[in-house]
Length: 541
Image (tube, rainbow, N blue to C red; front, side, top):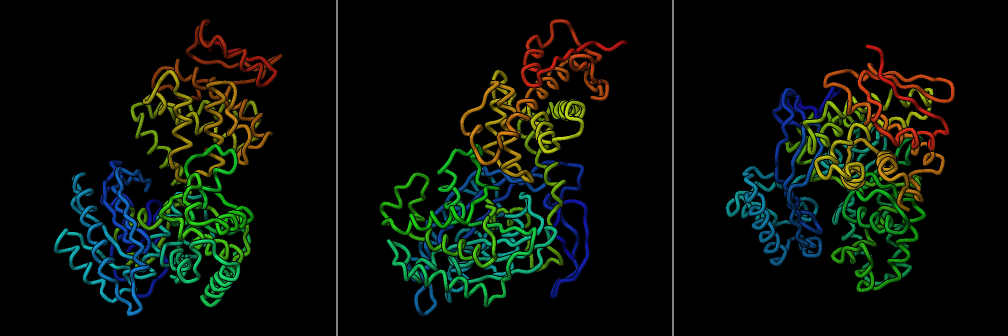
């Protein structure tokens, strides 16, 4: 039986209908001795839009987008009362598939993984599309059921998030896949007819919807959730949301205040902010709504429907926060193309493994040659933090070590601004296993080391508190110290060769490799951050 996992295999439990198979991991054929990435093309024919994405899938499951193409289809609006997709819907879908095949094969990818979801599931003539896709374009388009869609969404959405237990809702155009998970394992799932486009059409939420229409939509969503047996979240569990509407609402929310992280994956949106946003959007015409900064005009019709589903779900579950995943079905399909229904167990790797792999993947993309230097620099930063902070401030110390580990990626872009360049990459790229707060701490440490001051969006935001900013100023000086020490140690020498201890009036660091002219400004930065002196000396031979 197949278990979807990457590391630390735990093959337990049973799943009805599963057949004997082998254990696989996201590396698909890699034995663990090779860390080479693989490339894949994924096509998702959704109810609102279709998308083709060429992806690089790294050994640990991290994903980098190589190319992508999107076409708005609104298939849910083209399924008639007879349950058949009209000719326009069929033709536009085949046009999209033809273009998607061209994009994938332009990158030399012959094997394409393509799936259709709610609108094609519900269409009585979907075989007209699947047959033409295979015969005309060589694309084996699979129409997957709700349980497989939910499993793909789970593998895609939760992999890189700091989430152990909770509920995931992938809000698509025609349906919402709801997954309950425990200890990062899929426990149960259900596919509900609560898509953003479906709800917008059903309750006429497209253009300045009436209050009674909004109330009816909320009541309907809550009733569907109740009838499906979706229960309130237990203590310690979290709600994770994914899908186009969730990402759009989160992007609009993020623009409302200074915020240091540019990526959406891992963003957290509050129920109060979502309520205010839905009310403002509902009071606007579609034309005015489409002109809002950050708005995707093609979603101006369905965004309120998606917002109602997300907000009603939060009310039903009794939670005031939703953790946003920027990934979902397509990333799950890229990580594990086989049908999840053939698997005994859907088990994601532990967070420690995800974090370790994501750091290695990111360094490898830019500065693989200096990977060992980064590890030693991180060890030196950790030794300094342990001594100076006496084992306290563990979270900031961990972010300091990550900053030290990743510092060399800036070298590959611009050596003279390497700290700033590394910070810029951190706030923009997905770093699986790390929260936005952790990414902000890492980037802030790098920027403070580079400039000695911080831009406004790093000084005034809800991710880094004033108390943490003071500690980050100290962490920045520790980072500079570790970098200066590491830059003079012979290759292969361990970080343990450097010692740090108290002396009267400050700190004494001894290292096998140092010179009188090294790091002339370091003592001044150290004194300003700690109100104490530091002395660095060469240790006795």
